[in-house]
Length: 294
Image (tube, rainbow, N blue to C red; front, side, top):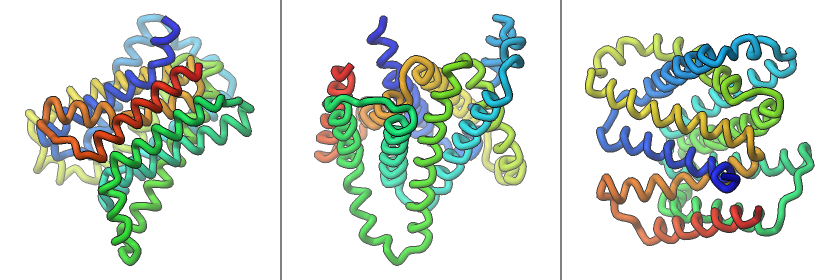
């Protein structure tokens, strides 16, 4: 049972990758609607669970500083998502993912080391570095495009926002990890979904005319189905923060490309390039090293 709890970030990464598989397989176009639909579904499910177990009195009983930490954590989460969306509009997804993931893992590691005063074994550090190198290797062909970006202001902005999204998500993991010492995963999930809706509803209202012209029932069905996987991923990720450290959760979650590439190969007939296959092997090696470090 203990090992399964330690592996929660991998389950979160798998459900996250499964959501992306659905969006890609059925060529969903209205991706700006996705976070809104996902957060709405998540909030309904979480509120139903909280009501069923009569958790609302507990949710309303925390001290002010707990609410402030949760608000700060999930404000950074929303900010990271918006920056991520802006980044992929400007540069290739592989570059965005690599930069954001590397910064996120590095930041949470430093915060845990110097603020939470955690000690990391050599095996954990070496495994973490191997996973990051694996992610970089997988996206090597995209990273080569950085050579052409120097004089392109739009792409330079994309790199900058990618780094900021990683910083935001690293801050989320650190703050949420601290808050979860005192609150349940349902409390954290309410803040995460509620704040996401507060920010995304006005954004989607401003794009109402565009949405009406392009949305259809079939696409809405796939968006909803994909959202259920993200809801699962979110709850598992928060659950891991509750049980494990922010560093542990962030580094194992960063192995998501393993699942994304494997699912793409199995269900989308996508061929793996040599660098992608080698990168997957590096990520798997890093994951095993991190697991054995405990």
